[in-house]
Image 1: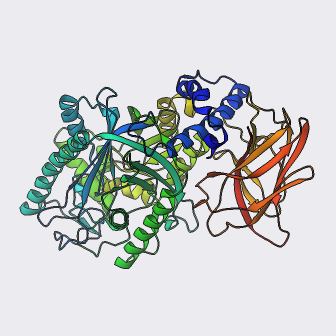
Image 2 (image 1 turned 180 degrees about the vertical axis):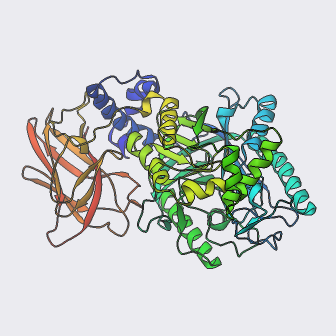
Image 3 (image 1 turned 90 degrees about the vertical axis):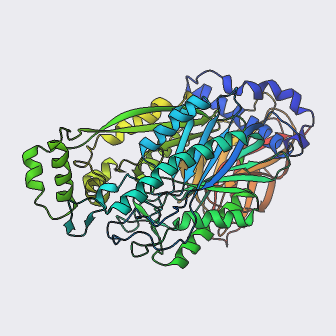
Length: 634
């Protein structure tokens, strides 16, 4: 990130190129895509370096207006808690964490601002969001596509209506009576007050807008465990968005992790925000004056481990906080324009719509499946129909071509995150679940085939007639692809294809992983990261490079590595020249870093360049390698 030190006059030289990046036409060929990628890498260096050196500026093209606000949404009275069917029927008996709603407002009035809200709740019912959209659109012009509400999915928060039907179901019994009147009153009062507070925090964030620097990056956390299958898939990514003022002071942090808020079990009948609230508390304690926000990824089939004790909440909160601190000191990608939002409502079909006769027979079942049947029969008697589909919102926020944020409603299983990142790339993607509505679990085709709680049993708790049909995964994925602009759908190389590296118009040599020859027993090309992974000390990469002119070149390494595996020796070899060094820490396998590692002199001809381990005695993982950049020294 020392580009301006290399080229002190390069700002004017490339200003038109940088300004024109967002208006480039749709890439129509692999060759054009490669050229675009090469220029983008160079421009990224320029923009990132400009960001680092603009912290003392009063206003800069790389800033945007951002407002930050928060409000307490802790119930004022005891209240029934949501999340566990096994929890006793009594109202809450104390408070471990205060619950908050927090908001970020992006963009000026002329840019049609966007608002991102997090709430420390089990979910956010769609009708509450719709009411807020209606209010904000009338008062401020904010439309549905520009508002996101993400719930933390704590199982220690108040009932807000989305799971109300199960409150009288416990174990092997159910009751046809209403809740006790005082309990119904407390839930109704809280829900009404919540709507008002969400409006207040959104308006406060809009009022608080001022110029700020915004950047994002990704790290990792490790306490989520697949709760369906031991050793099953989870999403360990920890994306982070940072907001600082013009003097570099931290104003807000938004962080995401794909894991349930179930550290404390149903035996705890006190209000709490689980590991999410603890993480926010610790982050804010470490950075006084900053507001910390947590959203949840596709973690519907992931539980925190260990779990069951208050100390485990502190353990997981500390892990998130520690990793946030690592990311704050890492090289983050600047976001230079506020998000553009798109949203559509799709229909997800249920696998089967039961008839009245089937429901009558099902009502004899002593489990929640029978309880659902009795509720359904009651509604049919009142003239309502059993639904055949679930209306479902899919939303995207794109920060130009720098970041795509996917907002999915419901309790989304990890397969969606894995598939999205495989198809669209992990390097520019952020996935929020529990966004805008929580109608039920959103199982994948695999999970629906396997059955079990997430696919079937949970649907009756959520007042649904049956599991979804297997086709819902493709319906949701198609909707995401339809909403995203072309910049995020450029075809990626699925394998590395060695070819001769040609110099750019300014003599840069970009040795990307996709154009390298990989040698060794472990190394594997990862298209979602455009990088070589599983790069061990037994492996190496080779490029054939056409050097355009004789010159000295500064060499930059673009890599990621966990702190535990960092520190191994490397050699970058060109002919008789050997550039040696140690692999520095980046913070995690998902946190990439670009750094100058030395200088070499090259002649103008075709040359073989090799990157490998520098020590025969070292063993194990070395790094994930995205590219090596060679920039001629002026």
